[in-house]
Length: 493
Image 1 (cartoon, rainbow, N blue to C red):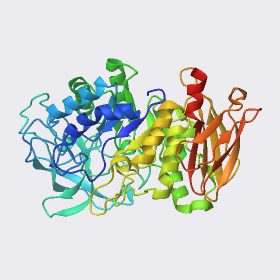
Image 2: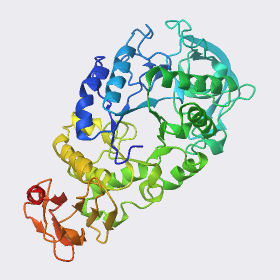
Image 3: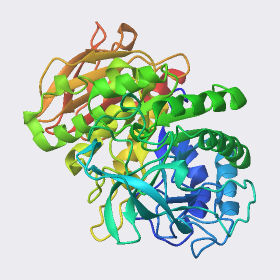
Image 4: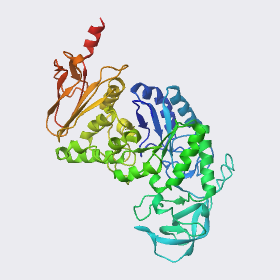
């Protein structure tokens, strides 16, 4: 994790299927560096079920847009050559690249196979609702377009624990695959929603199978060396045997060192679930702070009915800040997605002010908030205010944080600055009427004039003899107070 870093999720759900995304990313590298982005989370770069696939209908982990498979050479985002060029360009600007890695399932099998299954209750996957019987399922992956390059491993029914479609009668159901050493992952190693949430979609990979474990570890080493990525965003870890994730991380660390960054997506707003998962991994990876996201969502929808003093209750940023990757929204929370929980527009600048300007957490900037969301119901970006917040983070948000979380509708904090960036800043937020916070910025700042860099408040603030300022904020707004620039010029003269 970069000190004072900013990760950018460089995609949203409705990107054009034009194969030019890696080119756009390469062309954007210099700009991203200039605004203070220190790492980029890229979408799944592997061959999916077709170019319309965002990458989560994963077909071949070894095909990065190189082979003619599923009716295309490129992925939705471009070719392997263009991907590598984008990564190399980002590295020129010292921006790390985190790959979105989908290991829970496989989709778009090449052939069907016959095998025994038991249908299970969708609301309790531990409960059988049929006797064992044979189906024709899509579980044979031979990757004919790749012809064994990079790996000759082929996937068959015994490498999976479940599927959801019987080709024989076109019936959709949740089928648990039967056989020696088959079944869902142990209840204690996956999320307990629906009894056992091992099964999510498509052909569910069986991480108790030794050949699968060996192959995925081998693939991870190949992929990191082939692309030069600096980290993984692991998709859907609540559905994957946590013991395998631990082994995979250990394997990667042994070869590439502890600096290789891994963040897991465990979508559960209950702190206890996230804490339990971190504990299972010996706190050696990070998680997205889903609890904070939902708190921000509720704050945006409840307005002045939300008590800001409770904003950080039971969140990772409060309980395990060194392992908290904070975000406002992402591709899963955007409108019309299964986990839709999109923040109201008025609160979005406030939410970004919170995650970007606080001392703790590793904040993520969402492509859709910065460049806009396309699709049938497009959403305009909030780039202008986000650019200002990024500038503030890059230049002022350093040093010790002192909190003033003593009012249900008005909160504030100060950052003291550090040796390299000594100025610091003062932040005030209101989710109700106009308010203020009297906050200490240091006796050495006595007599200095502060201004709201965001321009929401036009009145200046003069720091008193004791080092305190009376910092105001407009109704339902955010103000970030920094030293007036000409003071620095005068003192230098």
